[in-house]
Length: 61
Image (cartoon, rainbow, N blue to C red; front, side, top):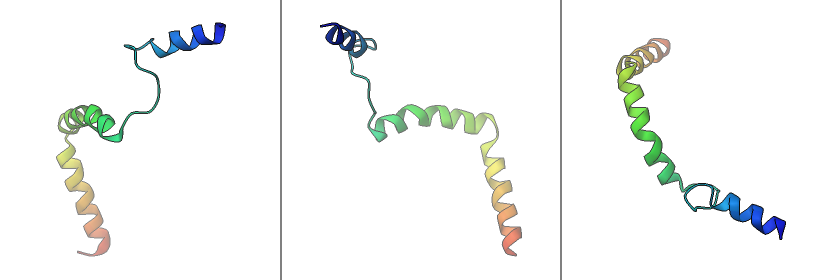
């Protein structure tokens, strides 16, 4: 009986959903807006261009 009560408390601790893994598309939809904000906030385009330039120089192009 104590195990059932503990499991019920655990299952309903977060809005009544059981804990477990999320669908990958749901996880991506949650993280992509934050990733986009950080990308633009910290100059992601400049970093991508600098990295591509370095790789191109290393390959001799």
